[in-house]
Structure formats: C-alpha cells, structure tokens
Image 1: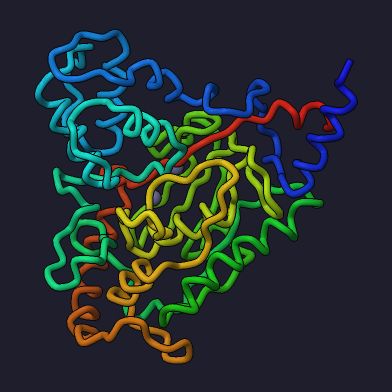
Image 2: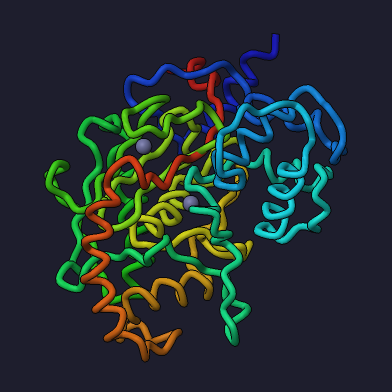
Length: 357
Ligand SMILES: [Zn+2]
Ligand SMILES: [Zn+2]
C-alpha cells in the first residue's frame, strides 16, 4: 500500500546512480545483510580455543586479503594461526590487537572494501616502519613497481558499452575528476583515450568471475580491484549500487572508489591511515575523494611532486627512484600475469532499480 511512496523515495536516491548495462540486479536489499560477509556478525565474541561454525569463512576472508598465507583445509577451530592473523588485521586497521573477534573487529571485517590484499608475501604492508616518518602509513607493492619515467603522460579508457547514453557524461566526469586529483599532486598527466585496447589504464565493470582469477562477489563485500604498474587494469564490481553524483546512504560513491583504485594502478598499496584514500574500506553513503597528506607523500615518493601545485614532500631520492622505475618496468611486466593480481572490490544491492526501470 505504500509502494508509491517507496518508489518516489527511491527515485530521489537513484537520481545520481547508474546501473551497468546488461547486469542482472540482485534482490532488494539495502544493508549489510546482503553482503558476502554478513554471517561474520554471528561470530562476534569468538576467541581462541573455541569451535564455532562459521569460523572457516573468517579464515577464508583473512586468506583472501593476505593474512593467512596458505589456503589449508580450514576448519571452524579458533586456532593459533587464526588468532595471529586477526592480531595482524587489527594492527593494520589500528584496532586493539586482542586476537579475538571483538565486535569492532567484526564490524570492520564486514565493511565493503577493496579487493587488493593488505598483506602480500607475508609482509604486513599497511604497517611499514618508516623511521622518523612514523606517522606516514602509505605503502607500495613489493618491489615498488611504478610507471617508467618515459611514461608520465598516461592514457585511460573505459570499456566500450559500459554506460547507457544518459549515464555516460556523468560517469566519465567522475573518472576525469578522479585522475585529476592524482595529476595535481604528481608529475603525471592523464588523458582519456577512445581506444580501450591500447590505453595504458583500462577501466571496466564486471560481475562475478571475469577471467583474471579474482571474481567479484555481488553487492557489497569486495567493490573493486586494480593491478600494480604497469599493468593498467582497473576493475569495478558491476553488482554495486554505484553513486555518480549527490549523496546516497545506500550506494557506494564511484569517485571515492575510483580515486582509490587509481592509486593502486599508480603503485600505492593500502594505508592504515583512516583518512587516506588508500585505506582499504569504505562504507555506503561515504564520500572520500580528497588525497590525504599520507597519499600525497606516497605518490610523490614514486613520481615526484607537481611543481605547479607546490610540493608536499621533498624528493631527494628522485634520481634513485627513476633508476628503480626502469628496473621495475621489468618487474611490472612480469607482474601483469595472474600471479600478481592485486585486487578485488565490494558491493551493495539494488532491487529498487527494477521498480523504476
Ligand atoms: Zn585497495
Ligand atoms: Zn578483475
């Protein structure tokens, strides 16, 4: 009987939201209960020594994001390795390192997030010791891959046919703004190309398994992922309720995720600074698009500062960086194989779209 009101309300919300062509929307569900990780809620309070159905899923989650290196035959036993992995997770997210699944930890784990692992090759990437610069929490991928010095004017393209005609302009503007934020802080420039196949950075929305070994998981959960330089692939989960303009507490802000994933494409890993673009999680209804000091320090360590925009970080190591960059080109080329996949991203649901489409 209230359907008319509901539809009207959704239309307001949806004014700035687009859907990906050809994608089948999951059921109507606007909260975390629809996410792949909603079952974690039932595990709040678990600690070492317990046997609780569902802990296998926590172990799989921690494995996915690098906290448990091997996918052994996981059981529902809360064992030493799970406690250790949870402690590392808690340290990365600056939670109390209790080693148990306290409610704050579970809530953090249920948050939509980037699919790029936090820990790679056993390195707790988000906690890199920085000596005197201990307040800086930015990280790089192993080997510090970056785009080579002869490639500072990068092209990008969005997979053809991604947007409907009515969404196209607004969606392209989102990506243009996202790239401009990184260009303003660095010596890099970004130009949209009409050739998807030859562009340096290739942006695509995919649902589920899309051939790179890192399938998306439907609404919420993992939102997006991107590959380390110079691969250039940036993938977003087509199942998300993406918000392109305005605010919606129901959807995921596309520009926020785009800025984050571009950071990966350029060589940044995750940061434990909650204010940083490179922090791994984002909640529905949140907009986080401005580079934080932590992001700027990190990207300028890789590429130097944009002299027109003023320097946040001095770059005494520029020459050394360029040399590394040349060497990393080789690393990066090898890294474009599936063996060094770095991503995956999250989700939300949108049955309401069906009501008005
Ligand atoms: Zn990420
Ligand atoms: Zn992908």
